[in-house]
Image (cartoon, rainbow, N blue to C red; front, top):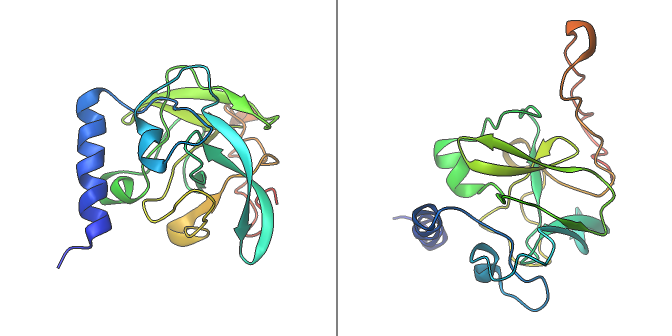
Length: 174
């Protein structure tokens, strides 16, 4: 039997794809379902919020609907490695012109298979279908980690052909 959340998430992703992608939605008082409808271009695509992460209250990055944002450790600054069924569980955050509130890092857009995917300090950002606003359930699952304002930048082009070091196993900016 299929899990109802996965079926609903799949239907939602199909509707978003048919509509042309995900855009920023109003940050104040919107539900998670409004996060993909693009009600307002003036509200931040990425903002900070407090949430419990591994039993501690942390300041994390969330989308305009308040859903926690994650990065996928194997991604590069220029390419998402999240595809197929994994992308259905971890939808990418996309926006043509992302803005931030409360976060001092750099937001960029990477044109990839997901469209205009938002990156924070070079880390491509995703949500998790099992999360709700203020609830972090995907920390450490399938190599995804919650994004924080202090997330260390990824170098977009390594110096002298060297490969950038992988993030440490713990301490992803919080």
